[in-house]
Amino acid sequence: MGRFGKVLNRVRRGVDIVMIFASLVALTWSPLLGPQAGPLSRGLTLGAVVLAAALVTRLSRRRPLAQYAPVSAAVIAAGVQTALGNSSPATIWLILIVTAVILIRQFLGSHTNEGLMRDLTRQRAILARQAFRDPLTGLGNRQMFMDHAKDALEDADDTKTAVIVFDLDGFKTVNDTYGHAAGDELLKATADRLNANVRANDTVSRLGGDEFVVLLPRLADEQTADTVADRILHDLQKPLTVDDLVLSVRASAGISITQGGTLDVDTLLREADEALYHAKDDGKGVVRRFDPVRFAEAAQRRRDESDLRRALAEMQFEVHYQPIVALNGELTVGVEALVRWRHPVRGLLAPADFIELAETLGLMPGLGLWVLREACAQAVVWQRDNPGFKVNVNLSATQLSSPELTDEVGAVLADTGLPPNSLVLELTESTALTDLTESARILGSLKTLGVRIALDDFGTGFSSLSHLGTLPVDVVKIDKSFVKAMRETTANGSVAEAVLQIARTFNLAPVAEGVEDEVQAGLLRELACAEAQGYHFARPMPAAELTGLLQRQTATLADR
Image (cartoon, rainbow, N blue to C red; front, side, top):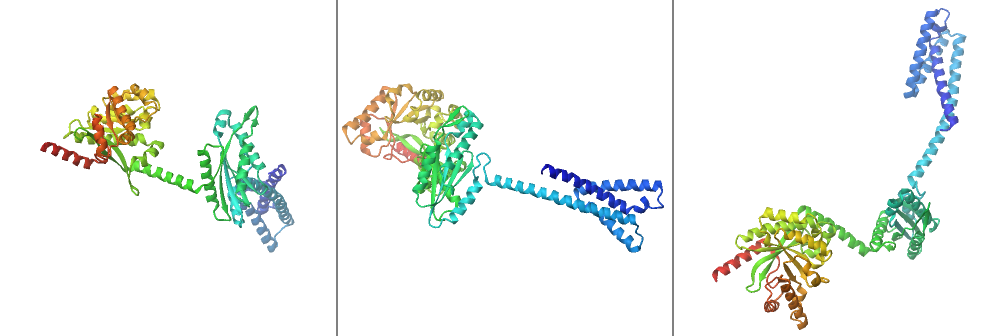
């Protein structure tokens, strides 16, 4: 409200008080100013009038109509007195004064109301601007974009409509390094550069944070959207001076295009966001169009992630065991524990179908510890009839990097009662060689528990032979590719022989993997390989099936 309006408002309140007081005086005219009124009567009446006027004034602040009650009563009383012929000229003049005050009050009120209406109109305009504008950049906000996009799709006819979502790469680093003031200036400059590269009928909005969106309606061809996006990315890469700083930040962009009104706004924006995600995934600083194939793959991955998290919560996993046999008599002397996922829709899944995803999601430490506990508990049961029976359990890369690994393994051994030398912990060469020094330290810590360490896929790791002596390893598992190639060429056969010789040189126990037939088993016997595993002997099986296999083996030995 302006200054003049505030003055009018104060005058109006003063007139209201005069109106109330005059009306009460008119009602109490006879005891107050009548010919027979004494000083005491007049004083008491005047005091009552002042008190009543104060009460009515106070009440009218909450109930504005209350101020008209004394006026109405005074007018009615004057009318009755006039009809009875008892009115005096003084009373009539007083009523005229009250009427005049009411007219003045209405005049002042109308001007005050005009001021209020102007203020309300101004406030509505400000609110409308805030509802559709971003206060920092002056661009439209998400609501404006949604409204304009809906209108564009309704009027698209046979033309194309494109939505381009931009995201500044490294904006958080600018905020963290130079402060939010520099970040705000960068956002304003981005808004200016976006506006400079679009047509007058295009819409540029800030979705929030460092994410912007451009709406391109009524396009003749799809290539226009690519051209605009590339031009904007090139412009955004230009250095920007903020105070004494020179900033240069790249951006990534995702494009979604529809013909006519085929897609709604929400779908267009979601597809542009998905394309932006792919642009980020492809190295940032690039433009990507929405790709239905990649979208389907990403959607499937999200479903897999959700399923895998639920599987771990509901423990939909099982441990299967593949026998490790002594080649001299093909007796099962141990097993390798292999996790399986009993998916409610897809059935039994092998590790290759979910282990990599579990690693990415950080679920392997929990899942790996569960497998370790299950396998150790089961091995204790088998050892009752098969003394010295051993169990191999795989360690993932995330498990190997956990500082709690040694304590966790020790706790499992203590809880299950499995002798430490019956547990063989396997890790691949690639995992061990990621950080050789740290791997040696962790494996050395595990060795203090009394467990044995096996190096899986031996012979496939880079520079594995030169680093073999660094790792405290007890067992090497010869990779199945060498086993498979033994009978194909003499040269490849000699590779398996060389690996076995290396194992003996380092005093390591060799186990051949992936043995698929009797020919491979025979060649391994000739090379004096002590133990092997593979489909030739048995596939991975549930614990109950392996129990039956061990019982049949025991019965066969008893019959000999």
